[in-house]
Length: 176
Image 1 (cartoon, rainbow, N blue to C red):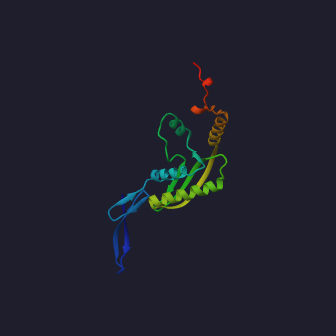
Image 2: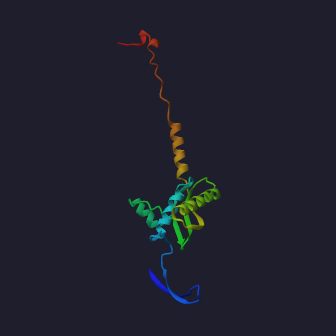
Image 3: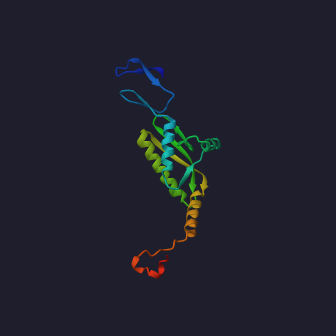
């Protein structure tokens, strides 16, 4: 950390030199025992997870390279599609999402905004100023899965029932 020396007047009007710490990390919270630094990546991860918890979100919109990496076995990145701007006490979050076909986008967006704001504020103590939603695509996968499930149910033929009650069997039904 850098120290900056400032001249400050005390109660008696006498100039005193004071050392004031400045830091490049805006996400620092002073505590009596030490500092707490919350990285932008942590806030991005919290926001990404809080977004994907909401029904109607098909996924987060990321880069082409990130998508290729996931196809080849790289871990899913929970902060994919999340941009966070932070200063000392506030954050603005931009979410780039893909929604399921058929959802009401304004209602879904509001629900995402509330969940992300509450999650980030509760876990970090930051004041979330804005949660901006950018709808980047619509997914038809859920609809496709439901159609496949319906089609498979229609094609299933019921199995014939077999009467196993011994009283209903005649001697003629039993062949040697």
